[in-house]
Image 1: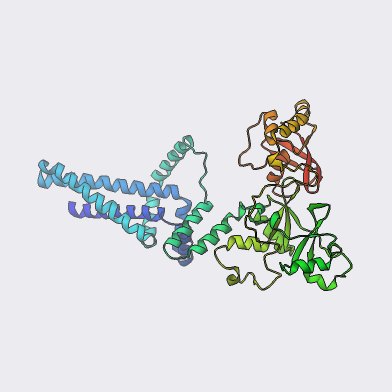
Image 2 (image 1 turned 135 degrees about the vertical axis):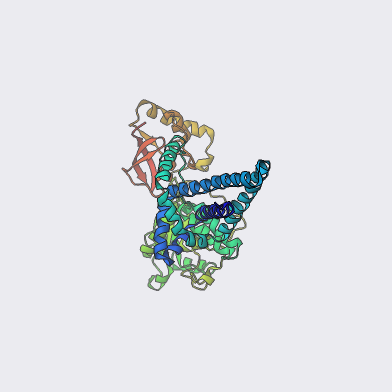
Length: 455
């Protein structure tokens, strides 16, 4: 038996299995799809291996370890026959270094940089090994699955947005795409978690007209701020937007009639409305702007398609992208005026609040008063109505529930509306961490009363 040739062949086999292992592990989805599209037969084999990834890994590991053991045995045998027992330890250490370098390090380094090439030439030999070792690899797979059930993790492995972001940032660092493109793609990916309150124009920056305003008032305002659409509000309640006036209809306006006579019905949304749900409404309904309400039914701001586009393409001038022309007043960002300081987005008082303080800033004495007013109803019977302005922490205490995660609302009504992510509808039942609540009264798009159905 020619021991040196056998050892060299086995060393080549070890390098083959090591290279295949690294190549399959380093594959990404884009490479898989490109390979399947280019090579029909090999693509089907690759798809088969991906489907049976666990058994493929067993085949590679069994083949690699069996080869390494044979190399060690043949080296020891060759050392005893040719060199004598004195050199057995020396040859064992030498073959270990050779096996580590030529059987592990070198092939894996090559496979990392040329994984597609290694897979291209190694698919069919690996398929042959797969069927030859199938009984053993299948048995090992069953044993592995049994052990995995004992140590099963609750966290499921899934393709997430973070993985895509890592690919984008890596592509940016290697010069494939620009940093501004990465920022744009990142904003698009986060649209599913982005709400209207993050993008909207704040209520303090809205230019609006009273319902009794005439064309003369509009002309005086338009000399300072030219916009296509102006919200119309009730003079008795500036928080209540009754409609939207479109300046494109100005030729039809009678100078003696108020602008409210020609107003369009406003499109109203909740501040918790998700942007990825709002965009289809804009495009399908040809809506140019939406009035945004807070959890108390008060005016929070307004949002336009320009606001969304500005958030996504904030690092790129919109006129260069062809979305909007700044000279076109129909697409100019509406209703925004410059302020030296931008106020915080805190809910204002609604039409039914007579206090000068906002709901978040209500004194502890007032909060205790509200809690005392509603506690008797909640404690005696769950089917009683609850005031939607009841403090959320009070409901949590009375129901002995765990505080819900990632909640920004301070009242039970605001909490329910935050879960809905849209305007509330009377009669609908909402399942929460505090139980099921039925909305029994809605006024001006604000939840006023609810019933807790279940504990």
